[in-house]
Image (cartoon, rainbow, N blue to C red):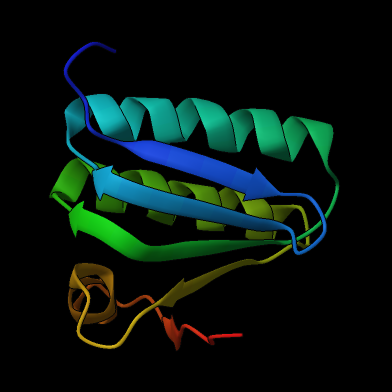
Amino acid sequence: MPGSSFASAYDEDTRTLTLSGDLDEAGAHLLRQQLAALMAAHNRSLVMDLSGVASLPSTAIGVIAAARADMRARFQRLELVAAPGSVARVVLPRCGMSVRDQRHG
């Protein structure tokens, strides 16, 4: 969608989807599409790195929560990681989602 500063990259080796930018309405829509494609193509758990996310409104939180529920129903896991002090590391635990600290290296 035009105007969104959202970006993502998937690393097949680590099964990590790295997100950056604004997860506004347009970004959340793109994330929903990408997660659906990844879940359809891969029958395994994923890691979502939200360290580079600048904003995380309720629409994006809903997309993440729905993806976690969908993966749980498939006996898979969506593990959330974020840098200490990042928006995701502060907001998502307040929404009942566990977030692991991002590891460097």
